[in-house]
Image (cartoon, rainbow, N blue to C red; front, top):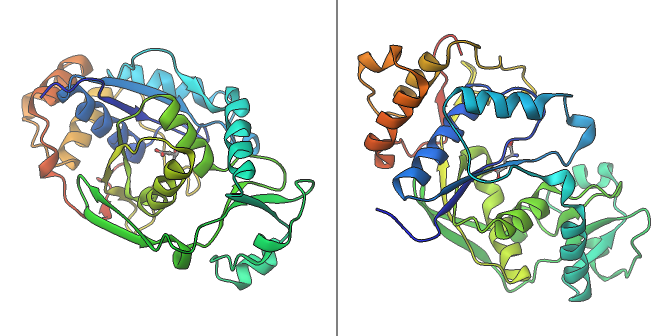
Length: 297
Ligand code: GLU
């Protein structure tokens, strides 16, 4: 079904090459956009320079192209968007929806990660302090209908408390940047891994604070190792094997429960993508948080 102005996106962090887990997210997002006749955007989330691996952004873009996942328009780099994040932060601070906080890491860990909002009424200035979003006590539970995982609800006050939108070292937080950029890019559907499911209520709340429209969400199970850990650059998941794009795609479609026929294995990536676009059925995806990665990935 073609929908006017349907926009999806893939938003990798350049902390290493694409691995199997990121390929399935990119593929699910791409196919979801294509069956809706929409635009598929790529955004490089290069907000955190110390975690960045030199050359990773270009490597990821090359891997996407090699797998036949071609994006629309220009790639957006978060490192070029600092002014927009600063403006959003000023807007929130001016509206008394954000405040500065001096609590250190030790104190936060003693609170088990749920901030008790201690600095909310202290009136601290910005210098050498982090900035937190003030959650209004009346918000209660944030709910949304996930296209795969169903009804999701979270009480963000008791689950996280007032959360950081700019760190003390002045790096903008993932939560702020992703919210500002999804709105800036006109994203109407977010398809990503279930590891971010519990970030979505925070992002929905921030969209409301900033007066943005809310996209719809579909969280795809994450690919995990035998002992249940997310495949990630941190646990040194292997990058996708090079010169193996057709098989990588076939295995990814199989893992996504799309029942790709065997003859596809040897076709060119563009042909596999074209089959997948015609046959994509999101309802076949399991509504579970984790699925083991296939052998060899
Ligand atoms: N950059 C994030 C990551 O690589 C994904 C952000 C998102 O899809 O919202 O995990």
